[in-house]
Length: 116
Length: 117
Image 1 (cartoon, rainbow over the protein chains, first blue to last red):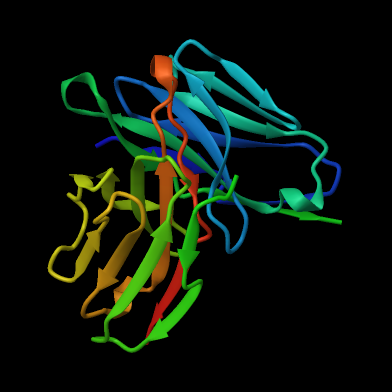
Image 2: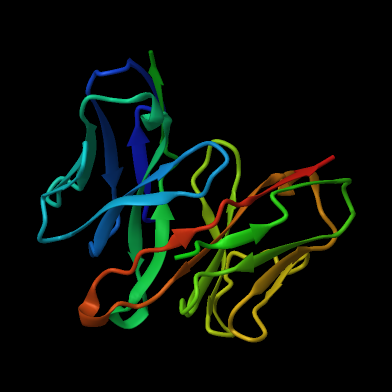
C-alpha cells in the first residue's frame, strides 16, 4: 500500500529559528512530490512540487529537497515567522491505471508552532 | 483570480439528519475533488469529477454520501443520514491540466467544518 509518513508529528520553535520537516514515501513508480501548507481553518496551499528529476526547490524561505533513491523528502524553513505556524503536509501521487496519474496520497502533516 | 468557494463554513447537525455542502471551483477548472479531513489526518479523497462526469468515487460511502456536478461547474456533496464519525472538514479542490505534462496543482477551498452530535 502506497503511504506517506511524516515526522515529527508536531514541532515548536522560536521565531527566527530554522527547522526541517521530514517525509518518507513508498509510492512507486514515483511521479511527483508536493508540500502543502495548511493554516488552521483553511484549505491546503501548495508550497512546492518536485518531479523525479529535481532534488531541491525553493519558494522564499521554504526549501524542499527530494532523494528519490531513499524515497525521502524534507522541507526546510529558514528564519521562521509567526505566520509559519501551520500544518505542513507532504503529498505524493499514486500511479494510475495504464501509466496515467492516480490520486494524491496525503501524509498526516507536521503541526508547526512558531512562538515569539 | 477568485479561489475555490465553499459554503457553509460551519455546520452542526444531529446524527441521522441530512446535510449538504456546496462548492464553486475556480473558473475554467475542469476537475473538481471532494475530500474528507478528519482532525489530525491528511485529506482523504471522496470523489473526483472531470467536468460533469465521475472519475473516481471508490472511497465514497455510497450508502450515505452522494455528490453531483450536473453542469460541470458547481458541485454539491450530501450526507444522508449523518453519523457521528462523519464529523470532519470537507474540502473541495479544483485543478486544470496544464499543457506539456506539467504536474497539475489542486487549489483548495476553505472547507466546511461539520460536527455531528
